[in-house]
Amino acid sequence: MYKFFLSAALVIATINVNAQTDHQKIVFDLNNSDTAAHSSALRNFSNVLKAAPDTELELVCHGAAINMFVKDKLYFEEKIKELKSKGKVSFKVCANSMKRLNVDKSQVSDLAEIVPVAILELAAKQKEGWSYIKAGN
Image (tube, rainbow, N blue to C red; front, side):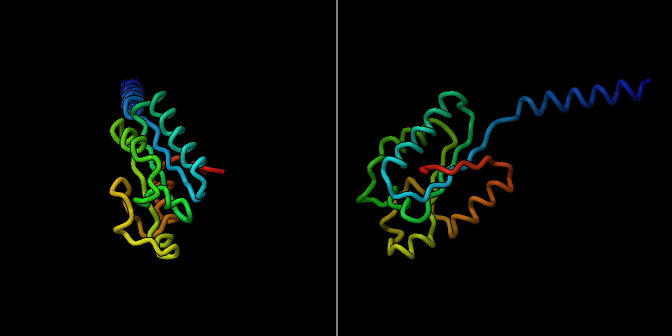
């Protein structure tokens, strides 16, 4: 009987710890050049943070979507800064896409981090348990 109560107490303690530390982690995949798609992704970030402020969010840009962070094409700079100030929000730009589109790292805003391969970044996040969302369809 003692072992039963001890086991039950351990299960309850584990459930309580997990409930207190459980929060969402979501990675968004964006490869669309359309600024409307960029705006939509940022709006999704805002909506998520409004509903669940502890959520970790990451936007991975590849293909033509890297233009979202090219300095002379940075239409959403203030919104991106605002989102980064609200929580655990990060933005990644694919180095392979930069090379293919002839974008030098000096042209990329410091609001984003350059990753070697966007697909590997997305896969790593999913392996770590992040939810995957395809943005900008």
